[in-house]
Length: 309
Image (tube, rainbow, N blue to C red; front, side, top):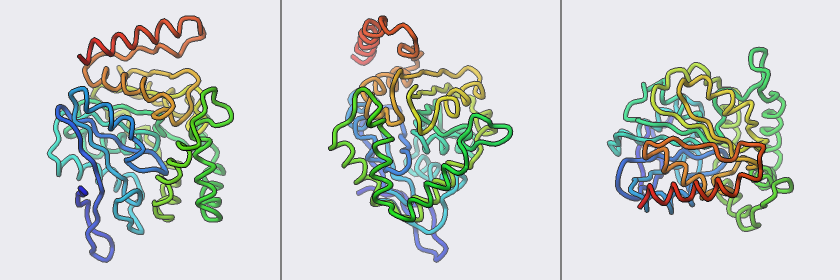
């Protein structure tokens, strides 16, 4: 197994994050969402290295196979952990891809560490720029939502996380529901996290304001979101974030839920490779004209095949 030291805990014990590293080429670093681990990028880890890129995914502290300290579940520390990964592997010309909570690490890293080593960033179903509903953020989510999540985690973490997986993939409302196997796998990725990390990270992604961080991003930036995402509503996430990053691209996946890295894995892989290769990603699906979608999907697939041969 591969580990990178990220510091020490309050007792002076070394802390490490677990990571995997596949392929050759310019690196793509995948930062997972709550409450999962780096293994949640299974379909990206299996596909992207086949197309001339190096792909690294790591488990956030407190999750997966990484160290599980009592403290450190704030975005300054998490951004420092990301820096430790990039520095230890001496990565250059990096594309950072942050999913959901992981988008916060991308935003904070870019401001806190001046975007060192990074050439492109991608936010997928991201919590940035600010999840919490406040007087100057009326499109945010009520604080009671996050408080209830923490309370329910304390009552029955395993039951709550199992139910959360259904919402993650839009189960019951999404037209293409995932299998029971995917739901079971998702729960199994969430269960090994420490209870402390699981609850503290809800507070972190629910209350951290990334609006100033977004303005520091000066590299090509892509926002991807599902139009049916009810965990990070588009008006709270991508549609609020994109105007804060001049020149950024924003792409909506029509009808897709929060967990589109599974439900729309093929399109996400195509779009990530297109963006990494320096091409604009076209918003094929965010349209009211449903009759054009099959044709546009075919064109998208053709564009992908031509670029990756």
